[in-house]
Length: 289
Length: 289
Image (cartoon, rainbow over all chains, first blue to last red; front, top):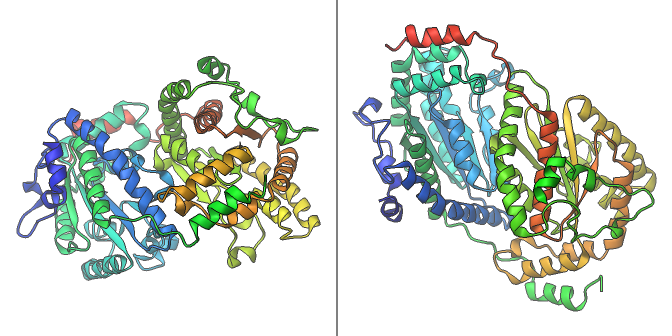
């Protein structure tokens, strides 16, 4: 089944956010709407997928060495414990780290707040040939900023348009944007927070503020729903990734990345030198022999 | 044999650059002076080593979340095709990419040249909890700068002391510096350059300038020898990594990194909150139930 889905290239189609008139809570965070239905199946598909991802990433990188401008930006959003870090480890970790540009956006610093909300984001946009990964993003500025009333309503509403324009710019520059909402249930979050508190090796991942954010669950779901509805278009789509099962979440994001890279179909560049002439220089006129 | 060497923690001892009165060309680039003597043995040892590296990297990262200042800087130097990129892919690729800070130093830009040679290097020094990887480094400023006479002799000679002071600073800040010279033979370089020219998927890695640099092989070996002699001390040692065999090179750098992390022995931080109190908040007073 995993294989069939992959061949049909349908993971993007199935996970595409379609939230017009629909709330996020109608989508099952523990679902497996496409692809593998067991951990074993997912692992088997990832094993097939990994070398293809690796090769496509190398081609993308090489293409930019030859002057290409194309690149990828994977945006990861989701409630605490939804697995943004896990995706970076298990999906981004499948490719050459040299080809990655990872940026985590925490609470803005005083210096960052003196600028437009997109300032710090633009600085971290991936260069040509790279796969950028955003652990949180400019969407925080219509999520936490809205829920915690950090700015007036007119301000965060204006940001939707600014975000759409920014992402259109990225697309024009040659960036394929893939936005993943890691969709987790409140029960699963409670379980993961408990694990973090009970396991001394995981306590560093916990922050007492996490429970304060959890208390605003429905407000966040509403803010996510609006962001996904308002800022999703063909050049910069949102995907809803069921994230209660880690193996499904990782598989799905890996597939979304693979499908995007396959569509880009990056090419090794033609050399801007004469390979035959260089071979002659090397073999017949080797400076060292 | 690989296991014994690893248990004795002796890879650092064996590969430590000891070049007083000795030239680099007395060291065999195809040698296996410690550890595995076959590709299969190396792969088996790497499989054991990988999860340990991964765990130690996570601890280092976690320690910094708790306020720790320790970090690692792996400096990779070597002639073209010696495998700096291969080490990043196969060794740095073993850990969570979120914990890496990779910087490649190419020919300095006009903007960079307006600053002191260490300016661009300092900007890329890894922050607390990270494993920094330098693909080329400040050593280029006593290598190519010397061989190609980009600066007067008095200038590059002065840089040895500046480098030593800079690296002592890094160590004081909590950085464990591991410098690897990937030692390749001219014959093996010729073979790898030929592969790059013959294989269309590798031509992007080749640059006609590579043959010009190759022509200055002995000057570079002399410059490397002097740099390794002059800038190696206990807090910032150089290792000579035989690099004609890729499997040995990768194994050796992975072991050097592992030994350094084991010596650091990073610790998960004590929480700055009360885990029991938080568990009560979560389980008995869950805001969502």
